[in-house]
Length: 313
Image (cartoon, rainbow, N blue to C red; front, side):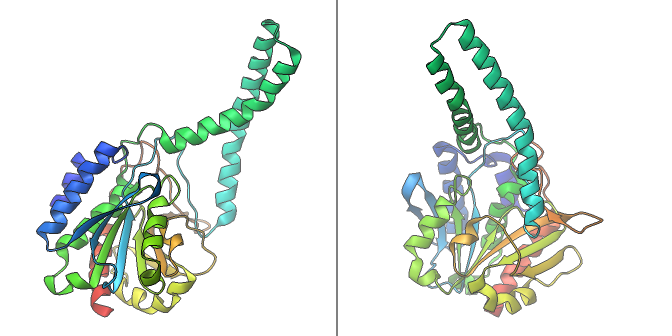
């Protein structure tokens, strides 16, 4: 484990409120400056503060990761990017306990309003509005609720990887890369939207590799957007499996909702487990207190591959 990883896991694993984010921004700025990189904090809508290390205009490749922290949830944010049916099925299964709880709440509220002898029209109106109110509350808790204190995979793994790239990058290659720590990914990809808008012209044809949840699972998937297909050969060359992980570079039949979606040449990178029988790639445990797995082999592999990619480009 590198020194920067130890510090982030110990001191900066929660990055949700303004104070926590500011402390992390200061730490990244300190590490980047010590290693010869310029640092800028680019602001955007909804309070976005993206940490930009290096010069995106001159870089051959841009590496990214989101640094904001999600709210803790009673159920994991399950992802199966190559099996949209499985992902939809999981969402539908979550709707069952939610619907049951909602029905009980509505009936209890109805009985309570009857007991209070409220006007019938008012009772009906409130009864109809309960699902709307419950959904708004649920969304609010998911976006702005109590911060998850365990964010090892989502996305402390991504930010520690970027820091490892910064500290390992040779002086001769510093001008060839830029690294962006995106804000407000969990709230709706707002940080990457702001960066994509500000650098729209230069990012039209430039490769962006976004590391998202890369420490829990032995299967590394590179989800390639249409504009980045031309980069697939060099990605395969740079990230050729060394036996510690299994690598797949794919551009079809993938739904991976993360920041790379805002860039024409975006590539999303994640670490996945695989089911034994059907071979389904999936991520679990994120957004819960069980997000504690940090597979060092993944981080080292992706760091070395990123440095190799710089040389190839």
